[in-house]
Amino acid sequence: MNTAAITITYKVPARRHPVLLFMTQQPLGAAGLVVIVLMGVCAAFAQWVSPYDPLTVDYGGMLAPPAAGHWLGTDSFGRDVLSRIIYGARTALAIGFIASFLGCTAGAVIGVASAYFGGKIDLFIQGVMDVLLSFPIIVLAITVVAVLGNFVVLGIDVNLIIAISVPMLPRVERVVRASALAIRELPYIDAARAAGYSHTRIIFRHIVPNVTAPYLILLTAFVAQAILAEASLSFLGLGVTEPTPSWGLMLSGAAADFYQQAPWMIVYPGIAISLGVFAFNLFGDSLRDWLDPKIKL
Amino acid sequence: MLRFVAHRILLMIPTLLGVAVLVFFMLRLMPGDPVATMLLGDAGGANISKEILDAERARLGLDRPLYVQFFKWMGGILQGDFGVSMWTGQPVAYEIAIRLELSLQVAIMATILAVLLALPLGTLSAIFKDSWIDQSIRVFSIAGLAVPSFWLGMIVILLLLSYFSWIPPLTFTSLADDPWENLSQLIWPAMAVGYRYSAVSTRMMRSSILEVLQEDYIRTARAKGVMERLVVARHAMRNALLPVVTVIGLEFAFLIGGLVVTEQVFNLNGIGRLFVQAVARSDFTMIQSLVLLVSVFFVLINFVIDLLYAFLDPRIRYR
Image 1 (cartoon, rainbow over the protein chains, first blue to last red):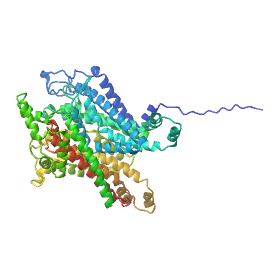
Image 2: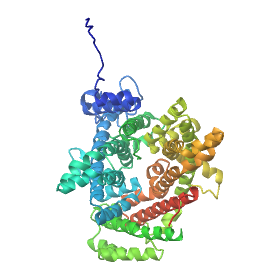
Image 3: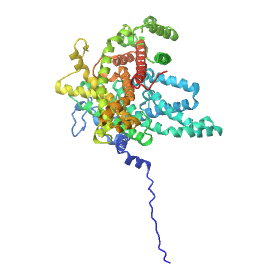
Image 4: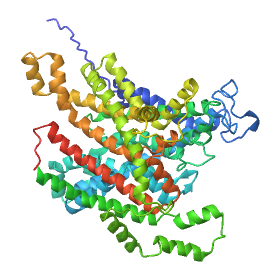
């Protein structure tokens, strides 16, 4: 009897890294991520990337148009616009990430607590959130800035960050609370309760892991919002103060006086803001489609 | 229906009271002292004696206990009196009234622009999902969310300045006085904020239409041979409008107080400008009344949106 060797080959689908998977399934989001990473690198290594010091004043070379020496021209103090934009990325990203992290984390904690405990606590928290929601974002931020004043630690204005993150609270809280409410009704929460676990354990081990998707989505979306808010507040003179380079600040004051002589002072910082916000929006949108398309922001 | 309206109106009271309490006490925590800002700011230093400062504080009622000040403010509001600006000495209601027309008009013009753009673009984007039309509309609207409206305003001014030597006018011309002049003044700020506004609404319209197109009654309409054009126009668009109306309403409410930065760029003397000035001058009475007013507006718009729901979708019944 002939024994023919039978070989069966089958392919185990290669397990691909989730980042790679995201990059191939969401090309637009990947493009956003690339821009974000580039901005991050520029911000982190600003000392080496930027051609000039952003603070060096050169009265001999004021309002110089874009040329070989200064690619994006100089401002009314003779400072290099490109260098200020690169250092501005540092300000924008630092404030954007910290503010978004603070606002989303605090909002998520309040949301989960509100959903988990329910009853009177929930009612009270919802009342407070309704109050915060009835302020327009910029009005609330300006009021908080006005009340807190400036408080700079390590070159970062802590109160500005608080002012930017407070308006996020009710918006994050609502989304996270809705997700947590649905989870609270699931049998495994009852099981955990029946097993006698403490509230903290149930919240952190059983509920929090299930609201990470909306949390991450909101986090990226609000970095974009925070960058815009920082630019607006700095533009109004209520945010980052001179001489710290900030995109919004670059557009305020002198820039508006030199519309015709030095349009580059206005054009390029605005492009930087738009590009940064655009990248985060693109990435956030794709992240939502990828993780949980039902979430409405 | 009547019970629903009454219930909703009653529910507004605690929210607005919360806003009033929050703003009032937050302001009192502010480091700035309105009297010192007002008197020392001009005189430049300590030339003014403590007696004069105290007398001024007494005149403005700032020396009295906080709760007395609060109830005086609330009592005034119930009688339609918002108090007197600590800076200009004019009634707050007057200061707001002379600026409301401008802010309201820009907000309305921006809304019209946004609706005119968003409804067709959002619908097209949804019908031709994933085609190049959809892709370009989506990029256009995501860009609209990214471009800061105040910068867009600056770019518009830059272009107008370069090509038509147009500069933002120093004074505001009312619509009643000279409609043409008025519109040519306000169309640019309306466009600058309208772009962002239309972007938000376009995205909502697109996702809303996509959702509605999945419904059974759309399949029924198609099955009985209704033309695709009519399926979209009569069956899908009408039902898709609900969430879009919410977005449009919320953005409109936001514009009344939220034009702050754009007004600065276009040199418009509106509500937002007034607010920033009041903050810079620690004008307590102005800030608190302005914030309360904007919140009232916001809450009312929300209420109107809810009522519109019933009108647009007869299935919704309020009890």
